[in-house]
View (cartoon, rainbow, N blue to C red):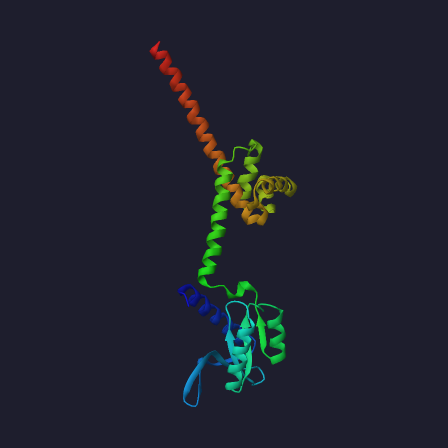
Length: 235
């Protein structure tokens, strides 16, 4: 198994055992080896005692359960005189579901999010951060975005407060006035559509944009004055 696959399986195993304990199971032994007539023929992820005292062979699958996995856990359970139980992301197909029911294999299905490992989680976080950064850069550079002077005060209040009501109170305006600017924000960036906290980030970026534009305009004006002065001196 590749290194990334090992990490993923180990993370899934830890999550699965914790979930079983929350449901009243008691993990008796992990990585239980199966020995028949003095010969080791296999290993199961765990032996567990169920809420009613039943003995279970537990297998953890980082992915979905297929027919091969069902046969394997069933055979191991027979050898250990226990009931078969699998924790996984669901069934690979309908035939796997039917076979599990036929053989009495208990299956606890989890949403994909519950079996994420550190590597997968890092990818998700990195992707979200990259998306947010790209959108922030767009807000700074997109020439089609026009900020009216009267919007700056409202944007500053949004950026520095925790709720629309707080922003309205700071401005001495109605919540409806703040809501209009929030609607404008939502229209130009998806950042503002994820709640007020994200709208605050978008407002902060736009304030920086306005500040940079002001500096550039000031520099341009200064450059024009210097150029004019140089022309007069040259004359």
